[in-house]
Length: 101
Image: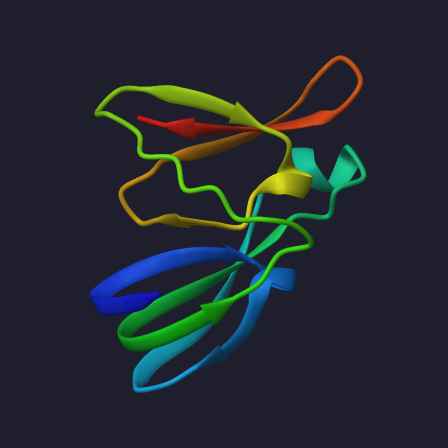
């Protein structure tokens, strides 16, 4: 993946390597994820360069329209762009991660 003067958020276990001028910072995913047992931390990748990411399975890119919402289990989130809002919440039996506006 190539970043061009932009920000991408990655689940901490998804980062492999980067080139160019990419700054790496951490972001807490929210207290609800901690108490649901997920302990969700994000890596904030900002700048320009190549970004190598990984997952335990295939990566499926999902484009969201403005205002569209998607509920994803936190264990399956790999990365998302800065323009995507998120909210961590606990579902009935699993933790959830709401992506969208």
